[in-house]
Image (tube, rainbow, N blue to C red; front, side, top):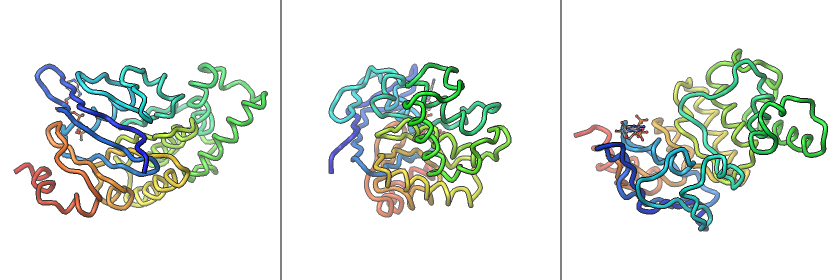
Length: 249
Ligand SMILES: Nc1ncnc2c1ncn2[C@@H]1O[C@H](COP(=O)(O)OP(=O)(O)OP(=O)(O)O)[C@@H](O)[C@H]1O
């Protein structure tokens, strides 16, 4: 299997805090790769470095062998690297469809011109892509609903739909299950697997071990900014070292 994303020797410090220490990670194309670890282990930091929201103190980020370490998030989106955030970042006053189209236009057209009527063939293609992406996340029936009226679980799904509508190669998800009901988490797991079926590689930071166990092909465990284990979910989650890290003993 080919590797699509790789980080090598990644270190990130904040003052005296070593959020990441010499982490190496390889994400294989077409897989769902989980990143887990106790609070403060460095999970969000590594996702932010991979997506360009943080520069590493040391180390490199590669996409298909190309060094993208110093590219901004906006420069990475057209290359196919897109992320979601722990806290929802949607426009509550806009509709579901508008939110997806604003996301697409953030790199296709500029800003709020995306809310003007669809005219060109390129616009029509984007609209079709937006609707397909909403369909994938079970949101087709909500296209005209104002986002602020949607339950939290659907808003989280919408964030992923919006990211998918930019046609990423790698989708980076930061705690997608946080705040969701247990039913919504089952749907979420299914949607993440569908994203993989679409040929998109997924990297997911998640505390919910059921989601990790059901969705992931590979899991990396971080603890105090270091990689302590990597492998298949069944092996990793049952390992005594990982259990100890979570119990903090
Ligand atoms: N902007 C920042 N400034 C200072 N310290 C930070 C910053 N971001 C993260 N840290 C610190 O770096 C360490 C790793 O944080 P990070 O958010 O990556 O952990 P995490 O594994 O995502 O945790 P959680 O599961 O609680 O979200 C923590 O000690 C955190 O306090």
